[in-house]
Length: 44
Image 1 (cartoon, one colour):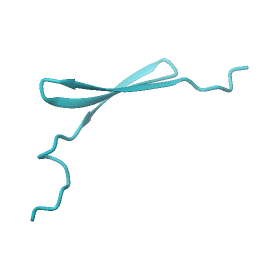
Image 2 (cartoon, one colour):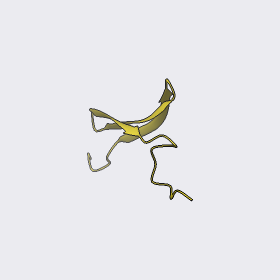
Image 3 (tube, rainbow, N blue to C red):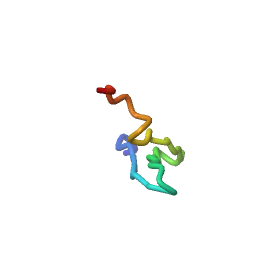
Image 4 (cartoon, rainbow, N blue to C red):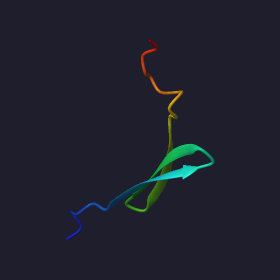
């Protein structure tokens, strides 16, 4: 019965940058989240 997928994800803040660490069925991937000044917030 291997129909249940295992997915682990957590956020990690390193040196002021935020990363999303995702462990999906044995494969590890890290995604760098945009910081506050890099995000697509409309400039008013």
